[in-house]
Image 1 (cartoon, helix red, strand yellow):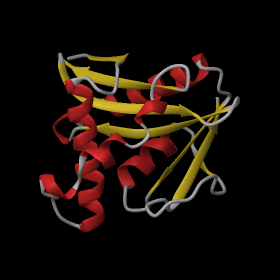
Image 2: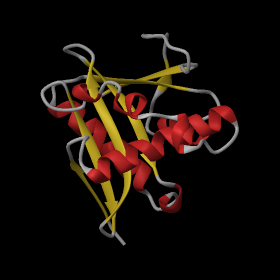
Image 3: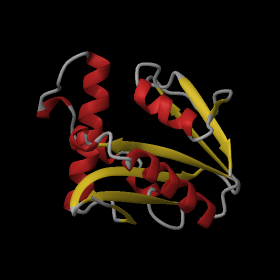
Image 4: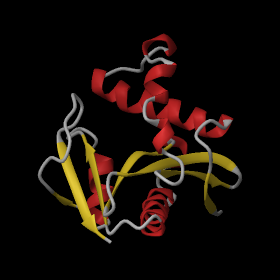
Length: 158
């Protein structure tokens, strides 16, 4: 039972399916129900994708026993900071250590791109994500960006 994480273009079928599942999960939690396919569109799912590729960033896909099961992105905000985004493990694969490996992989990718600090934003209701970040040494920081679904910001020195 092994995980393999590797950089992947955001437009591959596996990466696209994972991003759709991510948005379905986080938006569904926000609205308190499963969203229908027509409630989130390709424009939402594609927002900011050009930044998730070198030299501005990276996108990792995690496979568990060969099946696409997790993803996460990284965007350089400036010469020193990289933002983690779209960090997601499909529900069927949770509890198998993939989330910890994903965060480790994203932090390694941030270092490789020259970042000395990672930051992220999330919502208060995403308790599993917040616990994951705290477990990896992330601490609350002042807001570094704003948006309608941002309630708490975290940072970590690499």
